[in-house]
Image (tube, rainbow, N blue to C red; front, side, top):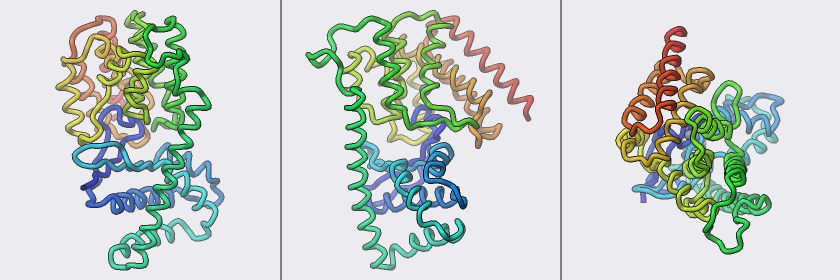
Amino acid sequence: MPFKIIVYDNFFPYDDSECDVLGVRESYEDAVAYCKSIVDENLTGYYKDGISTDELYDHYKSFGEDPSIHPIPDGEELFSAWNYAKERCSEICKENTKSSTLKMKFVKHSLSGLKENPRLAKKADQAVKNHIEQLNKSIDADEAYDKKHKINKYREPEGPMKKLPQPSTLLLKAAQFSALKHRDQRRKDIESSPYINHPITVAHIIADIGGIEDPEILAAALLHDTIEDTKTKPSELEEMFGETIRRYVEEMTDDKALTKEIRKQKQIEHAPHLSVGATLIKLGDKISNVSDITQSPPVDWDIERRTQYLDWAEAVINNCQKVNTALEQHFSEVLSNGRKRIKNES
Ligand code: ZN
């Protein structure tokens, strides 16, 4: 079975089709070795004398590439670059006595030697086995964290929710759930702002500018990136928040198995078929993203890339049903202000 190696853009992890397919490998082992080489190159590049493990890991989380592995034609993500990087950060900091250039050479050398050198290949095999073991451990750790913070079980003893809690309780519960799920993610702006700011902003825009009071739409806005962006499963959302919210979030979820270009095109094509609730969330999402892109852009996005993003966001929103004049007008304003801002910069 072939495996596709994908790198998502950290500024919109999974959310807005910002991903690149780096290559395809015939075996899982080859794919893991390739992913590790990418992470290692990043880490050795960022390593400076005196940097601590945590600083190195934080820097990687903010600016590094995080490749993941996906079986073709489709399937769950199989490799956690961040877990691997975390492990490597402490190793690199502990043993790093050579310069980062030497390290880079070493990594490249070991990789090119993998195929011809059976000893290295055996070592790599062991590394893959260790990695899978480590990955399982980290999944267990994740589950333990969820358990400790009681985010996997709804308080109602009967399992699937039959009745919604009070609106304020539902919203706080959704905010807490989302914050825990996005806890390790940062955006790519200069301040590396916490990712959770984004879904909170989306929900706030819909309520404040759109005048929307429907608690299920607002809760879904808080949760809209959890399936694509974290390990949250649709069934988990349904169990905790009911069917309607699970559906809205699924409507906001792109198919991760597709390439960046196809995903972008699909968002435009699917826009007219979104439910009213999902259309409102889509409006809030694009308003939030367009203002972020123009006011505090990702550090490595040049003017052309920002302009392309604005054009694409406009195409998606133009294709949506018209559901809320205030939000639609606000989107147009944010878009034209953003274009002016970009024009002034160029
Ligand atoms: Zn989003």
